[in-house]
Length: 75
Image (tube, rainbow, N blue to C red; front, top):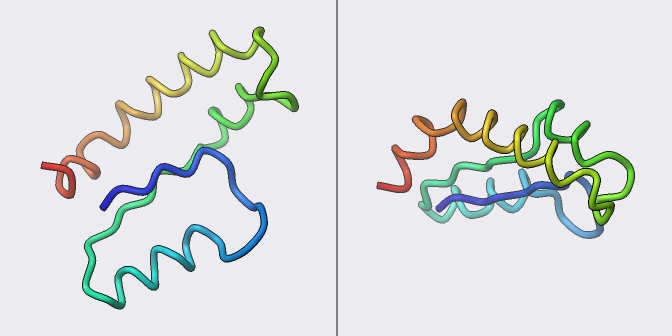
């Protein structure tokens, strides 16, 4: 199972708590969360159209880094 969590925090259990609960039930789980560069690209208003280009570039950069780890679960 791959959990994509672009935003940290929020209400309720954290993504890591949820992932741990799934793992306890035997699931193979990997979490993709926005790293520092991706979070910076979102800015303070994720609905601002000006963040689309930077967010796309950072998402592709982070995706290239994460691809091998996620492929082990995905494929």
